[in-house]
Image 1 (cartoon, rainbow, N blue to C red):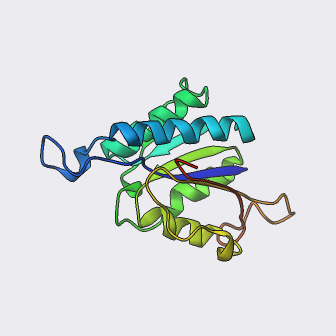
Image 2: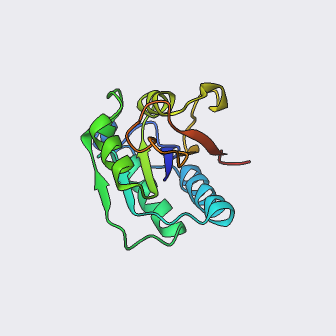
Length: 165
């Protein structure tokens, strides 16, 4: 299983409603997300079974752009409040994704995505320092006999993609 964990693209500083959850992606953020999607598609050709995102506008829009770029627009984007900013890593959702043993894209916010990756990855030194807007980290669980039952510390980093590079 490959899990692609992404922080939403670069967002506007404010929204017309004044609510943080309604902040849209900036034009630069949109281009950065599309760039990441194209790079991921050309390097890994993921076969996504699920796309999950925060309920916030910028995360959902990031997931939509990634789905379109990866040729997965037919996959419905599932939203989870557990992926919102300042939430703990969504253990129930992660177990569900791991049990399915299929590729998935998860789009969330700082600092939850960093905490999630630190929990999943065996060697945290493989992780990038910080996860800036639009960055994606791909992790994979080795196909070892008891790997399916284990969640924490059972993944290795396979991909780190940054917009503009």
